[in-house]
Image (tube, rainbow, N blue to C red; front, side, top):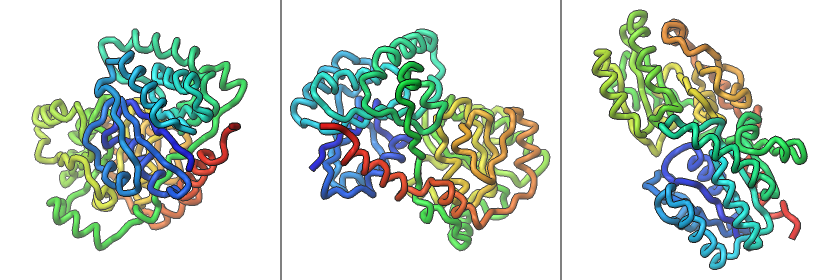
Length: 367
């Protein structure tokens, strides 16, 4: 048995968690023993599914601010569990310090996996960027493998020196393509359940936060309603920006045209209910929702900040101008029945990605 530690700063219901769930539920668990370790662990739609597969969960301090305590608890866990592989899923440089700790404790394979291209907005962002830049120069060299969901994500998290020396491996954010393939009958059912009969549904999936830029979508909807009065905005996800978004919808007098669907265990049904998909991120490591939307046959409009690796056929890039987006999104759009096939052909099928990762876990290091 090869023992693997999948380490995350936090565990909830976001993109990294979705990616890991997709991969881990498809690995051969007769050869692997996998732990999810998180600094902070919250409720997640993915946890029970992984527990059913034998995945164990460990929380460190419960706070990302207690850096030294988290490092101490991680050292103790390494002494207890004796991992063969550390798969560090990171979105900022200071997380790479766990590579140094794992190296000191003799973990032979240490994967640094980048999932992001920028830091979130905050009062201390400039300080965090300075720490991030220092940390990636200090700790990238402690990885035995560098993985990233896009070239931009690799450049953001890893030192230029190590990238020049070793390069990185592109790991697509794979999905279960058939799971998202468009189901016309289910579409009518879910639209009726959500009260969307006769509506033109502009959809979005993502954490409700600054990065995903749902505030822009509210401005866009106010413009789109001038062109298509039957328009509705379907927002799927939760996050710290929800109170602000609800208040802004009321201020714009469009609250009755915005449906906050929350987190869903059956996200594919919500994609089927949509008519077009909007993804206006301010920065993005990859953008798995774009791939899911295309697998569901949806036309996609996204910002120029979505990495080119996620832009497969059927994606339209536009500058972040609410009027321009409203004009494009309000047009009549036809679903693409071959969307799922295009996603598979582009290499985003989860079986392909899981196979790459399983092979690396089993054979990817020198003992």
